[in-house]
Length: 278
Image (tube, rainbow, N blue to C red; front, side, top):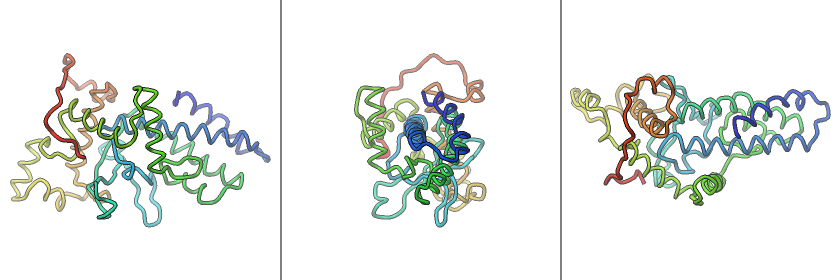
């Protein structure tokens, strides 16, 4: 229903903006529909980029730079990539490990359409009808916005619980869903974002040939092309590969990648002994 409702919203934008006396009821209904699309996008992003995420990772996710804040959304290696910080103790230490994830290409297309068209219209419409300046501006840089307000951890959890209740019959909220997705990712792809055991042996050998470990090399060398996000290019590529493996499992991989995959019968992956990142 998400892709079908967005074109309808876009069609009525000129009438809302051009009207000298916009109808409050119609404006509020339009924002309610946009809120539902944003909620659905969050669910689609979490389910297709692999591994789930903590609510604190995705709070205040930015698609544009903002004073004293750096954006989280990039195009790297031709893939829309969302970079977040992961840490159990981030609230205490103030920093965590960077994780780069790319949702399924179908979700990315919808995300770009919403951010590039619907969100900009939303910002101007809210200003036009006299809403608070902060609630207008938020649409110009933040990804997860509901009626001018940033989505909170509780709202993220509520959204996941609602969609999971409808789709799998279980009210799996943020923490439970994150554990479920991490287990499914490891079981289905035998990999995860923060495990260097899955790295290409050639990449490991290349770093060792210079007399340093994989982690040391990624922290101090070869950061030029991805310096703005603080991750080495090979680390980003590894994390993107994890996402693509998950999307292959979901049969949501881009046709460009699909054409290069060997035809194989479906394989049942047993749950391994590896622990999840949590």
